[in-house]
Image 1 (tube, rainbow, N blue to C red):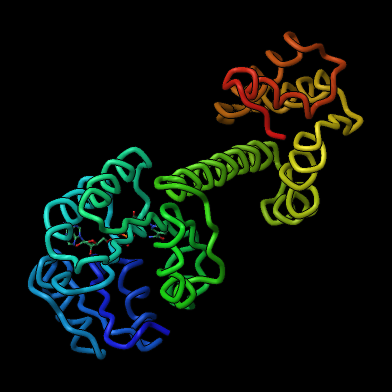
Image 2: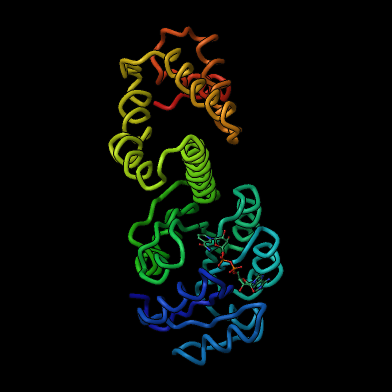
Length: 299
Ligand code: NAD
């Protein structure tokens, strides 16, 4: 539990902020809430043991923690640098739980550090239902001692806190996680649209693709962890064959008039890897296309 008397200012009572703040109240934390929409703060406080503040400054004044769940960098800068930094208690910690850019986060954290105030980035994975249930994944970046002090809050809100590293590392992990999920989503939508246009039933494809592309067939579980990270590169299938298979899907899409923007780009990437590294090299060595360009390896 929080040390007696600690107060949390919670700023931003939107889709995610409201259920997260409600969860903290239910867990016994003392909250002062605030939102640009004053009616949202009043309604929230009216229904629970929480205090509605008229401004960010009023919410944060004397608080030990200030949590922001705001839409974008501009709002976070406005709230954190424009108001919270002046009002937070000595030794207090501000926590940005929204999805912000790592560069902006680092600049704000630096300004807080100059005032000897803590600043932690702690974006969340999981939507409104997970916020309501307290089962979010929390990705924390910043000073390790500050993160330790935030743990009781994170434990009330989430099922796991991933300690990512210095300031901005949480926001970096969140961005790449959303990128990976977003890319997978549109690839699946394109694949299923091609299949549907060809005549396959949607429910049948969902069942079959879950068996063949999710779980133990997922590229992270089947290729990146066991083959790329281990540097084994030995799945037993050649890069040139995958380039051919993706090409079949792209050609099919073009032949039947389905959209193939991801299939075309994927075919070009696999062909580039096959041309550059050799078509007989293992499919998992496609990783080198990105590793070599960035000058890193995924060991
Ligand atoms: P939202 O737009 O529903 O809520 C944002 C709230 O912030 C609004 O109530 C708005 O009035 C308030 N606000 C904006 N500027 C303000 C300011 N200057 N001062 C005080 N209040 C201000 O957004 P959301 O869906 O709750 O998302 C919040 C953050 O969480 C975003 O960074 C989003 O990317 C991230 N996120 C969202 C989800 C989701 O499922 N919605 C999931 C994970 C992460």
